[in-house]
Amino acid sequence: MADRYQFLSDELDRMKREGLYGNIRTLEGPQGAVVKIGGKEYLNLCSNNYLGFANDGLVREKVKEMVDRYGVGPGAVRTIAGTMDIHLELEKKLAAFKGAEAAIVFQSGFCANLAVLPTLTGDGDLIFSDSLNHASIIDASRLSKAKVIRYEHSDMKDLRKKFEENSGNPGKKLLITDGVFSMDGDLARLPEIVEIAGEFNCLVAVDDAHGEGVLGRGGRGIVDHFHLHGKVDIEIGTMSKAFGVMGGMVAGSSVIVDFLRQKARTNLFSSALTVPDVAANMAALQMMEADDARLKKLWENGDYLKAALKSAGFNTGKSETPITPVIIGDAGAAKDFSAKLFENGVFATAIVFPTVPKGTARVRAMVSAAHSKEDLDRGIAAFIKVGRELGIV
Image (cartoon, rainbow, N blue to C red; front, top):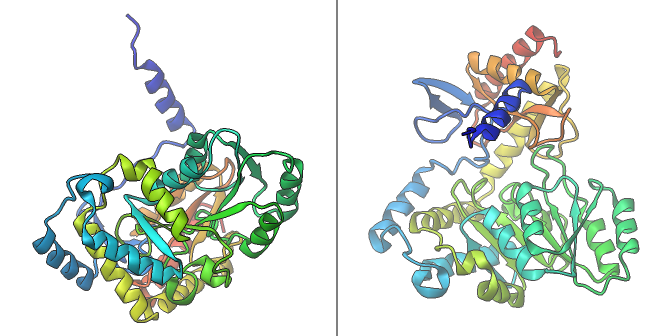
């Protein structure tokens, strides 16, 4: 009998030959500016822990306090017996933070997209989607059964053309875009998107996973950054990045949130966010509202790293945020670059297809407010040393 799993082995072998097979590192301690891997410490330049909350003392204390009061697990989905008063408290605080009428939390940012798109659109409807949108948007759009119309990345002429070509379609229309494109660090052209979508009576949703805690007043996100409150219908976010925890959120009008609460399958059929997650997110949100010192430090670190790498001759793309892509091109070369950095004490993972388009493989350098200038200087020196060794700069 033929090996039933041969097709899997063949695909894994192909990925290895083409430099697309990922070797996953295992952390042996808390997430931070420096992490422990294999018994050694490495400068961490690949985490989304933007504000350094993942191992913050106040966050940990809040978790301990809430676990003592509420236990650990919710024990059910939100619509049966899994809604606790702390879930509602977090949602109320998130809505106020985002300047929205209401908010609802989910298990992850991925789950938040799975809640929005298949619930608000369906067969016969249209979803307009940026060509570089996150995989969770792509998968959620497929589940919706709506017709997905991809427009070229941040190309407003192409977006308008796509709207005009489909203007006669009687179905509902929803446009969704990443707020910050995570692999390149550029921003969605949200003011223009809102204007064009408004002309065609189209709902606008923005996935602000990498904008929460990074853009806007005190980290309120891209809608606040562009002063578009009331003009963007749905803000989708994650609490696994700047919040340093886990969980997803959707903020918007009370009628949209109520509709999702009643009909979104990730709310109806998957257990509620755990008590430690809720507690940690409330603590992170409280600190974000208290002052913006960490946010300012994040941007200072991002600007410093990006300027140094660009000056050294690296291709850092068109990033407008603390995300700093070092674009190499070939997947194998990017993996070699990452491996050499690791040998020099720097943990910065190679990003290859299908996460980014073929021919644009990179090492994405991610800073945190937890990094010191000395940390960044150490990382910059390693990038330059390896870049010269491999003939990249």
